[in-house]
Image 1 (cartoon, one colour):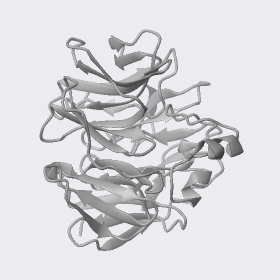
Image 2 (cartoon, one colour; image 1 turned 30 degrees about the vertical axis):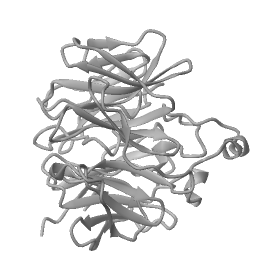
Image 3 (cartoon, one colour; image 1 turned 90 degrees about the horizontal axis):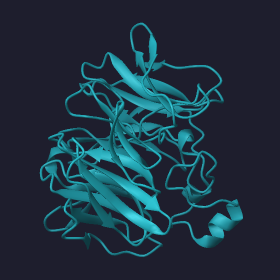
Image 4 (cartoon, helix red, strand yellow; image 1 turned 60 degrees about the vertical axis):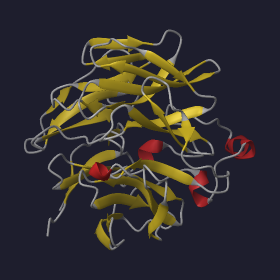
Length: 339
């Protein structure tokens, strides 16, 4: 069963595929909406459809929302600030923060940043103390705390080589896999409680890397796109593109595929027709620049709101995804048959 939760003339979408958009109990979902003129966070009750606004003021980063493990506080970035509700946790003066991540114990936060020519990560405790700036020479996206070893952060350098890790104090920086621009690795994340990394070699295969040995193996040859493992690391939820086959569940052990539903999303972005990262001439042809802030006008890798970005509910009996099948991106949920 698929349900559309939002409507109207303005863009509405769940948070990014690396985070769940559901509150504990799966009775309410939070999402980004432009109904007030810029990106703000809202919540909707799944049963009644009652909607409430969670943020106001300066616009938030539209894909930054992450729920604290305590279950009652959402962390977002806006401008150079990292916010928990109305409390500003950290501020990078003169900078901009992107996606953020919270450690499983709820103590630590990290976010990608850019400030002029500077790039890297901001790390801080949830109470605002212990702030560290970790520089990196290229664009940083998708920072994530290791689920079992919260002193480690995995992040993406853009473009190649992609996968890196660093300790939250800035030590131990290393590239996990060196590859060229023609090996299009995207959307890496942790394979649940296994602690290993799962990633897409677009558009050919879904692969797994052992966190300790760095041994890699192919799970399945399939055009898995945005990927979201369940907490146990047994199933991997994904969308597809070129061709769009819909949303799938992939068995992490066997690679078996199970079709869930069609998204109907337009899946825009010229680079997804290719199997390499965008080069300067690609951006020039598209008359745009790489926007790590997920610019709605991006045409090389987006607009991002035209991608499904499926993610799990807290109980893993539902998924949330975005679709512009009606002409305007809206929030959808689908039930997952646990059998």
